[in-house]
Amino acid sequence: MVFDYPEFEAYFRGSREEVLRKQGSYLPFIQQLAIDHEHPVLDIACGRGEWLELLRENGIPAEGVELNHEFATHCKGNGLIVENADLFDFFSRAEGKTYKLITGFHIIEHLSLEQQQEFLEKALERLAPGGAMLLETPNPENTSVGCCDFYLDPTHVRPLPPLLLQFLVHQAGFSSPFIVRLNRFMVGTPLRLMPKSFQYADIFNQLVRLISTQLQQAPDYALIGFKGHAPTDSALKILNQIILESENYSPKETSSDNQVNLLQQNEFFALMKEQLRHREEEYHTALTQLRERERELKSVYRTAAGQFILYYKSVKNKWKKNNASSEQFEVPHNTDQEVVHDEPSRSKSVQYVYMQLLNARQRNRMKHHNS
Image (cartoon, rainbow, N blue to C red; front, side, top):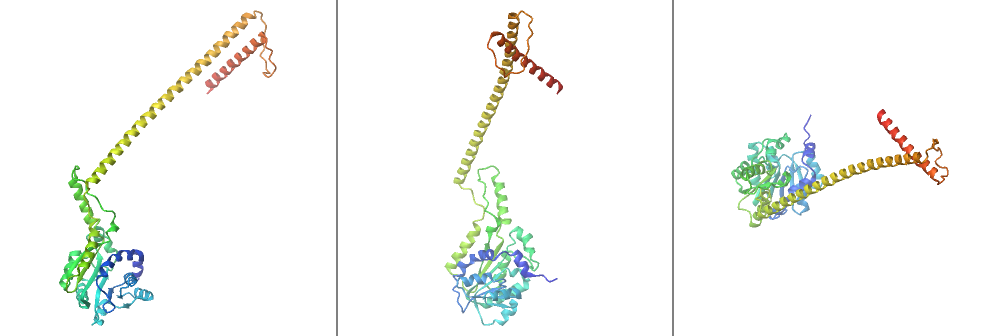
């Protein structure tokens, strides 16, 4: 089975928008090079052509060379000037034509050391005086890149530490080679150093710096070299701005204002915690009072029921005394019948209520005993 590199690129490299976002940071620098149609930009291994499209959108003449036939056909279909050829064959056929800028995005790591040296020499020959070369490659200073991500691409030969590539470019004859670390926004937000007044701040800050320079280091870097004289002041200023953007991700000392804010936040959280503790105490106090009130009500209920029974017992005894005769008392079954409000009827009604209470009490006792 043949390794399908276009499919691999589509899977791992990201969308067109992501690539344009990364490469767009170079535009301010490119615009300082006075590129024209006589000395355009040459993009080596242009791939899907995102960089060439970006240059065209900004009115910068450019052309590319691409070994992969599928990529080259795609670029031509988008109206880009691209030659389907090996880069060394292209250089040998393009004698006499020079370029103001030669770019190569993630190509140098695909070459052996001998090919890298030959490529740099050929690129220097094809540059116009005052021209520049821009090479972007994975940054092995980032631990994840150097130990893992670099080897996702099986066509990679070996990672190139920034100082090694800088040496190779300088050895090939380029002047003022700059290392520009890029795309650090991809590794997360910048870390903060602990204030020196805090306990163990020195140890903590050493760990933070180690994480920042290794795990949070820029995943890519660019090597920019020039032919002949040094770059203009305006180009240097823009390069410095790009470099500063990467350095802004380095750990920063926590300012005194931040320390004050931190202390204020701690005081606020402590106050909130104290208020919550008071609320919790109030809740438990209210709950205790409710339970005590419940017990009091139950006690009152039991006392009232007992008094009610005693009262009707006394009524029964009075009735017996007032009716010394052995007249039988019959409990009326129809409680809806009209009540005659004479003394004997009233006494019978009281005894009826009393007996109903006794019967209900007996039923409850039996029910409780059976359960």
